[in-house]
Image: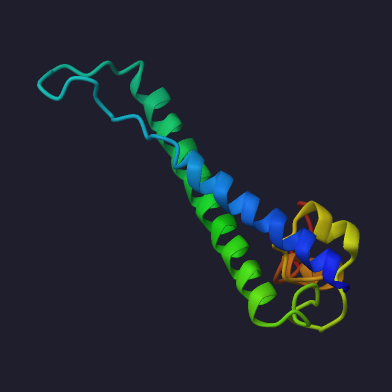
Length: 129
């Protein structure tokens, strides 16, 4: 990878980090609007719980992506040669993949192996072997 490409990825990662930090977390709606209220609206409670779960999931995902962005910046800063190489097979990661997600650590093949379902793969619902 040439110096211009490394600098382009460094800028893209720094911009992504700044954007994620400036946006902050999604606020999680409290379970009750009025803490002194005794009665709870049973119809609204499932919607509130679902909103809380969605906000929590989004915050967790954003935190994971932010950690990956920071790690990619560290790889780029510490060792220019390590950035853009798969951490498992040490083959170059495709430029198109890095352009879309400059924080990736794995090539497509290694990512597919990691994402493959574990255990026996059932072909149908009646396949019990």
